[in-house]
Length: 219
Image (cartoon, rainbow, N blue to C red; front, side):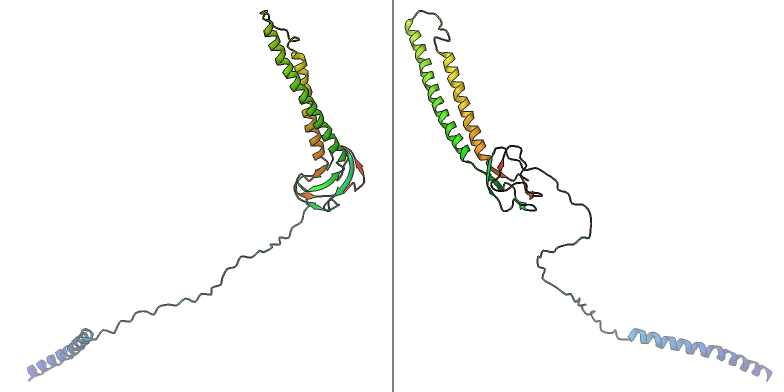
């Protein structure tokens, strides 16, 4: 009798441990089957992201930038306007005034040019006369050589015989007259006084009707 009770007790203990283990194994088997047979969810592509951008047409414009600053403004170049010829001022530009602005090569003052026109005419006439005199003397020089060769004495002619001093003098006078024409033309051009560069007149010193001389400060 005691042997049967002991066997029964052992069976109860075994069942107490085996049943939970079997139940746990059964549950795990069911879970594994469900995982294997579970249908895959449909794949969805991610939606395209849309970026919002504000666009504006660019137009070229002139924009003045104002930079607060202070200091002393000085001209890069300061010059005195001085005539190179003498005479009466007959015209001045509207820009020729205190504070007036002028551009490069702008005409500012004109001096009476009539005397300089006359000087140019006289200089040209003198050049024409001396050119003619030189041509005549040159012809005489050539004729003197021919005449000497005709004599046939075999001697070398002197400079006086060939009129070489007279020819040199005539040439020098012609060149001097040509220089006189250039000087007269230069003086005539100087009756118009032009601005050497772009700038501004600080102080005007003369006006129409005044006589000026080389070295007189105009502005």
